[in-house]
Amino acid sequence: MQELLQEMVETYGDQVYRLALRYTGSRAQAEDVTQETFLRAFKNLDRYDRSRPAAPWLLKIATNICRNWHRDNREVLFDSSYDYMKTTNPGPEEMYLAREGEEELLQAIGKLPQKYREVLLLKHVGELNYKEVAETLDLELSLVKNRLYRGRLMLRDLLAKGKGGSSNGE
Image (cartoon, rainbow, N blue to C red):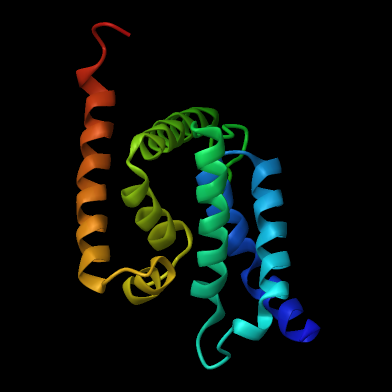
């Protein structure tokens, strides 16, 4: 059993951490969520169906922990010191523009309702396919696709407002 958990940590640890970091916005909190995820996985290893991929199961545990964190904190903060977008030797201007764009994206994601934020994070940060997102959140596949579509539209609108629509009063 410990070998299986060790393999899960080595294979999916970074994926769980990235999801937690995007959800919580804090490196320290993401590390705590990652550790708690694998602790709960170990405690419930007897419930894991080994004929299925581990990623959706682990990311479901991580998502539930993140939901609890979000409920308890009621505010999503993003750690802007983390370099989310890694490029090869960017110049100062590219670094500034990339960081500015990433911070704007993170703030917009944080403003989305939870049901849309979760599917976007699982799909794009957790790198799950539609079926795995549906399994992770216990949703119908069509609902996952709908939430992804609507979440992307909301995100696009939030980003568009940030680029030109809110320069008057802020």
